[in-house]
Length: 281
Image 1 (cartoon, rainbow, N blue to C red):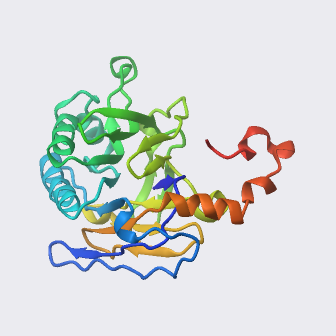
Image 2: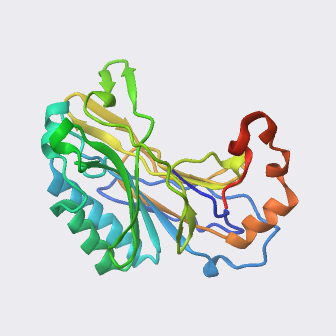
């Protein structure tokens, strides 16, 4: 899930598209009154929903088709979900399929971004870090590529997912993944500044949640419903349960106006929780 600390749109273009005969749904946004910008002047972002499997090249082919379609439709930034590269059958296979950031697979995505002229948010890459030889563990790394295919930011997940899902057994990311040790600052993109995670209403930001869907292999499935949520908590674009993409526009001017009219950050209590109460710049 990725949160914009840009601001949601005065008018959102919510266009749904189909892939592999699977419907992609889109809800209609409520009217806006704070901005005079037209929707055609606003940056367009795409949220891609996929079903990753242990086959990295098939996964890349599927992701590339969605990114190409997003670029064709005019998106400046496309979001791919966590584990866009692959979802393995077990931890041993996960470690076997992992690659460094300068490996072949990320090189393919860099070339894709460059050829399409689009920024890519790669939600979670199974990365062999520089300490791979010492500990044989990987990082869950969120990578941001610019339209020239260069890595402009990378964030290694700090809070790992150890859960037990009924019917699927335990999933313990910490068995094979190391938590990252740093928090990265927001990065300026053509659609505003991006974070790893954010919540819409109290953060006055635009949340973009790219998700996995469908059955990845014999013992694991995901549920789809990727979405774009505005700062009011309204779902303004949404995919259904199958592969596909949805689009939404972003109005930074509206964000500024909203923060002026609803100054929620002035209501924070930094005396209780320190710098966590201050808004990101």
